[in-house]
Length: 86
Image 1 (cartoon, rainbow, N blue to C red):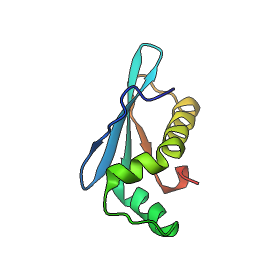
Image 2: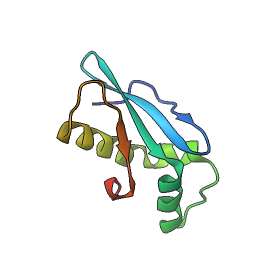
Image 3: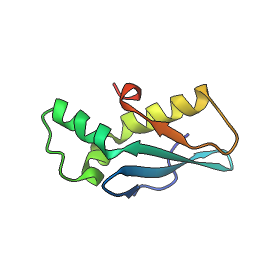
Image 4: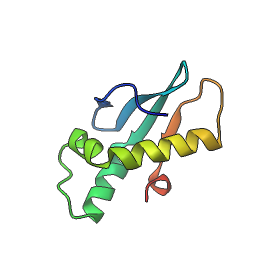
């Protein structure tokens, strides 16, 4: 389920981006807190969540796709948490 857009919506609380499932769009949310914590663990600068999203994009999208496939609900958003990231 690849993302349909390359630039997510980001603010100080979350990063949100759409993913496609055939003709349906699914919104994925991940708290910036978890992405920043991951960056800290990896020794990366965590000041810009858009850059962090791009750096961890493949992992975030893979986790979102796996979570969506595991617990599909019509019209539901996917919310990623720390345990969803490696």
